[in-house]
Image 1 (cartoon, rainbow, N blue to C red):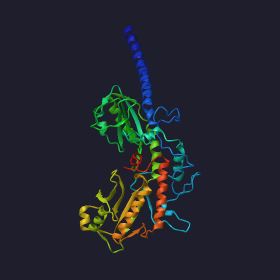
Image 2: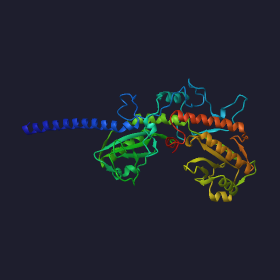
Image 3: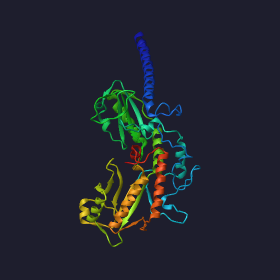
Image 4: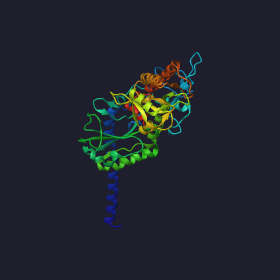
Length: 415
């Protein structure tokens, strides 16, 4: 071996060691910046050392004694009375509730149904802590939407210098099967801004946020792998450094979150029905519905709150066919169903009162009956029992920091 070859080998070894040391130093620097960046996103001081390297958001419930979490049928937490489905509720006089609450776990819904003990285990695994800064920053009235580390997998990208939105390229329009949001801010003390293609200016910090669960189910490991791959493809265009998410840990969080949401995912239906063989002409139904404030959209009539633009409840065809202008002109229907999506409206009990009043008025106008799924007449006693269970569902949502009708609720109970 010549002296030249020996010198090259030594130089190569020194170069490799230098690269390793440099990468180690860069990773420590990036981690320090990420810790600083996410200090405003409410990282809990009680995180275990292994979790302190990244934001590990989880939904937290309040003290179980004061605000027990709503549980599945048959589950009886030690801190709260047993809860049963609304269609199994009975009062002291033997009244059987004459309407079925429709949990969103049908064959068309991919949420997993888990044993009762697993649901309770998920709830108990969530440490009862006070509300954190992250829960207060989900939506800032002054600055709009904010990252939500409790329900999103959040990864920070650290550009070497401030970058425009255009630098994100195709990453901004990527579709992964769950809501993907990008946020940027112009400085450590500045608020986060939701980034869109037309957003102007340059940003010194970028975060990518992937929703962990919605009504189509939990974010899967392959979906999270795709998210990590997207970040690897996007980072060089900034250029930026980042720490790839722990796919297995995030998938586990997604499954836990999905089970909690599935247990609180409830709809209420009140059926308006003519006595067979009588039917309601489509034109008549449309006229009465529009006079009551409904508007036709997406195959159903919707009652929209003017101040917010939110759909409070809807009126759907009793038959499987959606409502259309042409269909309403030419056909009739035996009835219609008033539907309240409990997690998606603010103050669900109050909205139910409004929907109940509209249903009674429409039943009187159309000379129809208000009935349950078994076509038994609904009376005030049955409607009152339904309202009680709606209030319990709303309390269950609040107990795990999902305010009904909030941006967080709309994300988790959408899709």
